[in-house]
Length: 168
View 1 (cartoon, rainbow, N blue to C red):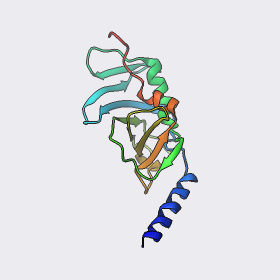
View 2: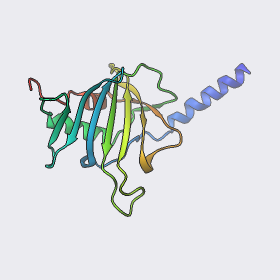
View 3: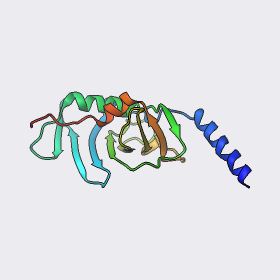
View 4: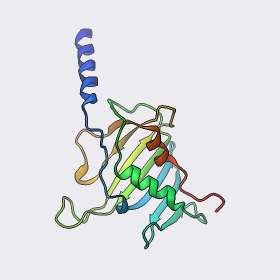
């Protein structure tokens, strides 16, 4: 039995080398809301899209202003999230949890009129990137979720950059 277990483990690792690395496919401008939680589940930042393109309202913490450039980087990175590598499991402590709400797709597409909330959990970034997992919502959801991954350092930075302007 130990030999069979080792063979299964090697086969699973080999299959991951060929697994799809694109994890999320959304239109960046369809990002409607962002909620970032710490590893304990406390809400650190909550944003809602404003009426104008690039305008974001800070819901939590109150009295602060959003950094539009940082939110745009987050929207681009998260809406086309691509892993550097796929993993069998995500077994690191959650450092940040991003809950991203995307507008409902238009009529004539799968699940029209239903907004999608994708949850991305990340470990603390290191020099080689960051590990994490994503749970997708809507027609892009997979039966094999959550999808575990390792992100490139630049992608980790775009997802974990502070979203609030300093000093506001």
